Structure formats: C-alpha cells, structure tokens
Image (cartoon, rainbow, N blue to C red):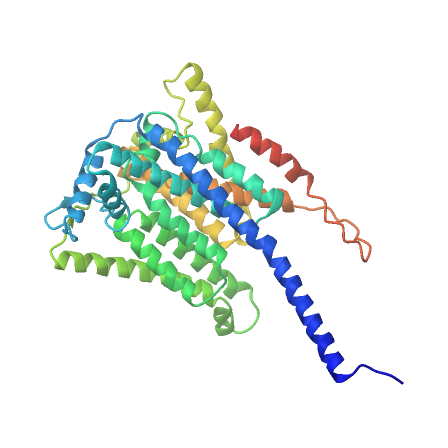
Length: 433
C-alpha cells in the first residue's frame, strides 16, 4: 500500500495553513474597507454639517457670554492657565469649551467669527455622537432607520431662540459631548474593570465644566445602577453575596458615579487653592406648589428646544414648527416605551431616559424655569439617540412576535425583516425630508 511521504504530508499541511490564512485575510479585507468607508462618510457628513451650522449660527447675534469666553480663552493662550482673577457665573466650561475656544483663537484670532466657528463645531460633534450612539449595536436596515430618526430630530434647530440655545450659546449642549462619549463607552465596551475607571474620569471632566452633569450624568447613572443591583438581588438565585458578585459591573459603575463627584470636587478645590478662577454658584430651589403655575411657560421652552414652539408664529414658520412636533412625539413615545420595558432595554437606554426625565422635571419644578431654553439643551441629543434605539429595536423585535415554525435544517436564507421595520425605513426618510 502506498502513502504520502513525510515531506509531502508536511507540504500539504503548509498549503492548507496558507489557504486558511489567505481566506481569513480575504474575510478581513471587506470589513476593513467598510470601516474606512464609514469613517469617510462621518468625516464628509461632519464637514457638510459644520458649514450649515456655521451659517445658521451667524443668523443670531453674539452676546456677553460669547464675549466673556472669548476673553477667557485669550487669557489661556497668554499663559494664564488657572484664569487667576476671573469671577465666573455658575458654569465654568474650564476643561471643555474654553480649551476649544483657545485652540480656535490661536488659528483665527479673537473675533466674533471665532465664536460662531466654535458653536458650529460643538453642535456638529453633538450631532455626530448622537447618531453614532443611536446606531450602536445595529446593522443593515435597522442602522439606517436609526440614523434617519436621530438625524431627523437634531438636524434643523428652530430659527431664533432655538439657534441660540443649540447652535450659538456657550451652554449645556457642549456638555452633551463628553456625556455622549461616556454613554457610547458603556454601550460599546464589555464589562471590564477599566470601564468604570474611564466613566469616572469622563464624568468628572464634564462636572468640573458644568454642574448640570449632576442632573443628566452622575444622578441618572447612579439611579440606574442602584435599580439594576436591587433587581439582581431580588431575582438572581443564590446567596445575596453571590448576587452582588454577579452584578459587580453595575456596582462598579455606581461607585464610579460617586467617584466622579469626588474627583470633580477635589479638582475644584485644587484650582481654588492655587489661586485660580472663582465660580459664583447661583441659588437653586424647588418652587412651592402654590407658585408652580408661574413655571408653566417653561414647558414651551421644551418645545422650543426641539424646534416645535409655535407660539406667535404664522405662515411657513408655523408649518415648520408643527412639523417639528413630530420630534417631541417620537421622543415622548420612546420615553414611554423605555419606562414600560425598563429592565429590558440596555444600560445606555436606561441612563438616557432617566437623564431626560430628571432634566425636564427639575427645569419645570425649580427656579431654573426662569432661565432660557438652553437649560434643557441636553435632552435633544439624548432624546434623538434614545428614540432611535428604543423604537427601532421595538419594531425589529415586536412586543409579541408571532410564533413561526422553525426553518428546515440547512435552510440558510436570511430572515425576512419584520413588516414594521420595512415600513419604518421610508417613514423615517420622509420625516427627515
């Protein structure tokens, strides 16, 4: 009987290994090309959006807030890194938008157009991060529908005060950028020890810049993690120590929210001890029940931030405001679904929903209702991402999916997308148009 010689057998094994390696390399190439194509698409979209928002920002006049931050950024460029002698209002923007303005001033100079460039850059970043968060965890048709929903909600701020709150004001819309990065990290990365560490650093960075992070970042994350741990203790089998160990990631994230507050407090104390800038905290209190009716007009500012404030408008502007009501209805629908299925949505969805509710409630029930609509600017990117994620997931899954017989063995045909998802694609596209 004959057989392969030892050398021939070795050669055959080598050839097979080479073929396998070539196949793996061939499989990776389309994925790499898709990643580069996706990056190019984001860069192109960012450039187009930046130009549009730069023109849009120019439709509203600058105010003293923009002038102040231009001068503070100029001081940073001159080497006054702690801004000694500056007395700020309740928000410093020291580690977020101030370095951005300083960088732009080094290129463009201290002039009004620099503020418009910075504002357009900020809203473009918030737009793109909201879309990326909305698309996270999806592919194919579902990813496109999510993109259209999130982009449709954020695309066109309402002229006038809507432009001021989202595309000009140095305010909370800039704070949404590090927060969106934080929620994207939670959604993308697996449960690893370093994720809570990064979350604590990101939240502390944002909190030093803007105290509203307590309401839309640290508070929601702490509440959600506590609820998830309590749910694990109640439902998971075994001794309570085993249950806590099983929910270690939620416990760690809850601790990260507390650590972020401590880190931000320590950073502020260090800056003050070194003779840095001074922040003047504004009074914050709940309005008594007999005076809540004075806060009712603040509800219109929530409509305003979504471009749906139709008070006092007429003609085409009234029609556009009514069209923007679709954004408010879609976000409200998504919030209702997230509340109804709270423990069945993802951690990022839970945090987004709680942050939106807390921001709106504290705006309507406290003296913050006297402030402009930019106090609730964060709910626009948060609401856009939440609506896209929750509603498209519901359409693709369905609340009560019909029982279908299993496919015959060996049938490799891809499953047919649900009818709701097939109809949602052209519907979302029409809404954006």
